[in-house]
Figure (cartoon, rainbow, N blue to C red):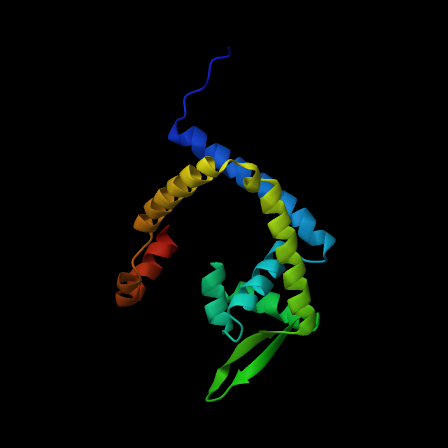
Length: 167
């Protein structure tokens, strides 16, 4: 029987990163076959749940900058998948809506994603899924504990800017 390497936090972290990279690459390939990038699919699938949100709200949901979302939305508008609609009383923001083509693309991507999940995580026994869900939930809480509090960032934007420039 071969010697098993100890399950250290570093080993688990790197295994998790490699697993994420493999999954991302495999899902990216499936989405490319549908004519979508991962970023486009993320945006379109988010709009299936929250149609009519602004680019700012979309950026927050996708954990990206408003600038990243802006360029992506521009390309999806040009491709006929997303519509920008004026928000009454707000000349600076637009509500984002899926076109029929955008909705079809999002649903095709969601179907491909579900199939991939079924082929991978879906192959684990139910008891393993329960354990994995509990562990990931606890691990997520350790990340959340490290995130800066929104109130303190709002209270001291200059301090946050200084910190970002020096880091």
